[in-house]
Image (tube, rainbow, N blue to C red; front, side):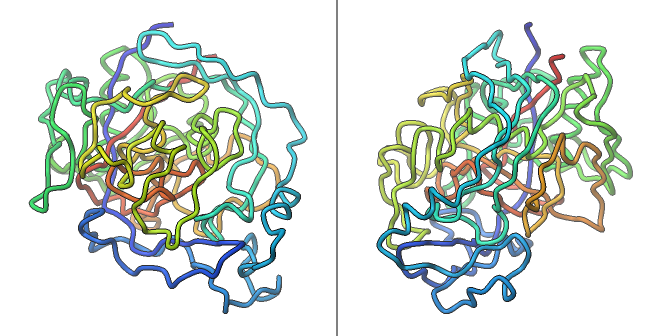
Length: 379
């Protein structure tokens, strides 16, 4: 099945990164992004409480779904593997079935979140959870490019910041600088052009699409059932990004560093994504499709531009009970002004590119490196 293209996206950045480390003492979390690594964000919020060696470690002293403080034991990594839950269903076979820039993702179940001892994980926001998706879907093989964005007659919001980081500019570069409401509006515009139903209802909008458009609220009913274009739910995004893997990246495990915000080469991540430890990476996004794709055939889903999802952000994760087609109904407004972005960023550190990593961002923010990827129901 050949599908159209494009997409828009999301927001400012986060301020505090939550991390649990099992075999070494954690340092205090940074309170802001280093401007040399990622854009500063005045409206970024708390993503996760970072665990330290001095934090309380009893179950009664931590939020539901949280993880205890570091266990600095020699066999921590072995214990970590033993703690990881096994799914009660079978993940479908992972093969690349891509056509016209879109890849087929079959329905199935997986373990969402990160194992307790994954280096760089959020202490409370990444608890593991069995999640089942009951609909096949198509996912765009790359992030929406600037050529695909401007093909709809929209101005190109991409570019560099005054500090020199930001979006590469070119037809094959991912579009950047797009707000979350603009991502939804772009998906609706694609649906309208293809005579498909719009998946979102946007209310109280002001400003032009591609020039900082914002809205008072966004609604979507039964997103998994909608046959138009949309951004993925958080569950769809992680299921597609993992491609059947349980490691930090779809290519393997992350390389631990002295600090989570260090920029150093990672041989696994360097083969599949762009990040600040990539020697040839620079401080900009890169033309799509240059690294090794995952098992479904998806490029750049681990490190290039941030990709928005439709869910509201929940700092305590997803709970522990099995879920089916979670968060199918969308209602985002002033009462819930943050959502997650996924996939890492070309000039940020390696832990942000992990498959389970979640960023809390303002629905009203925008800035360099904020791109998007689209999905559409396939069955």
